[in-house]
Length: 127
Image (cartoon, rainbow, N blue to C red; front, side, top):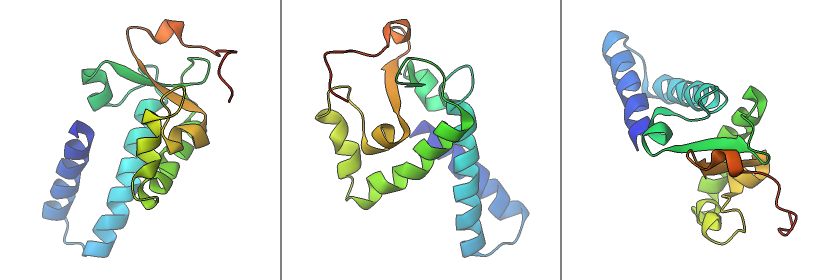
């Protein structure tokens, strides 16, 4: 929610400063959101501003930071989670490692920042 608000503010500033059409604004918003999430989640912080405030991080399956490519795949695959009538997001409640569809596709996990050092491959869980 916090991240969406930040992206909205950027969108609003662009709309006020430049007279652009709605389709251009929507495409620009997708581009800004992709850059924001991919760069933030692949940074050393492993989190966007909103995730930092909630003390959670996005890691790969071994607890390492995501590469920019994996963070990009995670962002793009969120559209698959949306297109399944949000079932892709609800999957997190029923999967062993609490992964949503886009996390499974990108090979990522969302973990508590405090416990992120304990994240790793669990041989008892079938992947």
